[in-house]
Image (cartoon, rainbow, N blue to C red; front, side):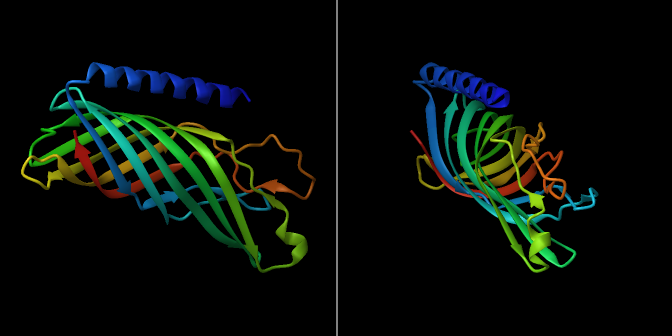
Length: 226
C-alpha cells in the first residue's frame, strides 16, 4: 500500500509538471506520435533449492503513444504511455515455466535535439519512469503435477525506473511536420519488483525474488508537429 501511494504521488507530480509545460509552450511546437517498440529484457529467477537462475535475454513486444512539448528547437519535454510485455522461460527438473510480465509504463523525459524542425534531427532523452503492472502469466508444462505448483509468481503493482535513449527523426513532407522516428530506449529498474508479502507453505517459493527489471528496446514510428 505504501509503495502504491508513493507511485501515485510521483505520477501526479509528473503530470502536473507536464501540463504546466503545455501551457508554457502553447506558442511553440507540439508533437504527437505512435511507435512500435520490440523490447529485449532479462530478469533473474529462483529455483526450488533457493539458488538464483540467471535470466536469458528474450524479445517481447511494446507499443507507445507520446506527446512532446518543444520549448525551443533544441530542448523539450516528452510524456509517453507505453504498453510492454516481457518474459522469461526456463526448465528445472523437467518442469518448464514461462513467466510473462505486462506493464503500462509512463516516462517523463527531457529531450535534447540538434534541431527539432530540421530535415534530420538527433535526439537524446532521459528521465524517470513509473510502471504499473497490467498482469502476469505463468505457464507450466512437463514434470510431475506435485512439483508444478511450488513456485509462486508474485509481483508488485508498481515499478520505478530511469529511462534513457537516443534516436533520429526525419521530416517526410516539405514543411517537415510529418516525421519518421527510429531509435533506442533503455530502462533500468530502481526498485525490487518482487512482492514477498504472501503467506507460503513450506513447499512453496517465490519464482521472482529480489529482482530489478532492466529492458532495452528499439522503436520505429510516426509523429506530427503542430
